[in-house]
Image (cartoon, rainbow, N blue to C red; front, side, top):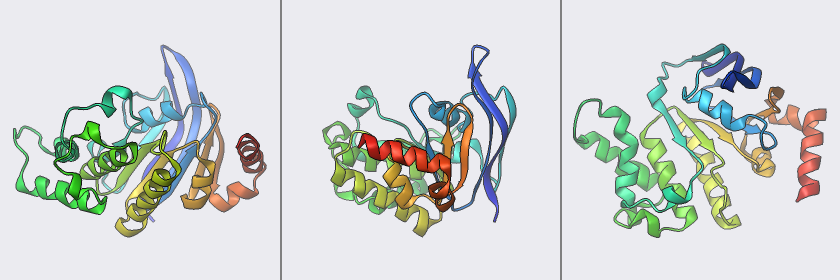
Length: 238
């Protein structure tokens, strides 16, 4: 199967100080990869690197399947300011098509239709005229996911997508992400602290602690010493 991303010996850092070193893994087309690790393990740094927001100190990041930087759909962790964004649901979703505008000042009919299609997929069409700031946390995440889908048909990068959501909204969001992966064939890379969700939905696990502690299938992770230790810690903290 063709790869979407291939990372070989990547190191990232800031101001000359290395934060993440010697990271190697491959994500195949249609895969669902969950990135795990303690706080400060380098997960956010890796996300910035995968989005080409920071350059590697060493190593290489190759994108396959004809994937361009601007074709990665990204759902970041929300800040308080972003939750209060003064726009309608439709405007937020449509803004996911910005990278396809190039020098055009207006959205095309095709881009508007894409926004409508993705709102329907996420079950938020009835909210299209609602102010984004007036929505619940779960509804806002669905809007941002629809926005991310407008930017890509190949790869979604999700950074703690269920952070701050109640259990019902969390389960609903994970189910939607799983359907996007299985029914649309879109590759998912998700950073998460939710080990139980990773074990339920992911196909592959990447665990970081300033380098790669584990990379492999979910089943391999559950049998590994690294996986048993991390899963045991999470159960003990629950």
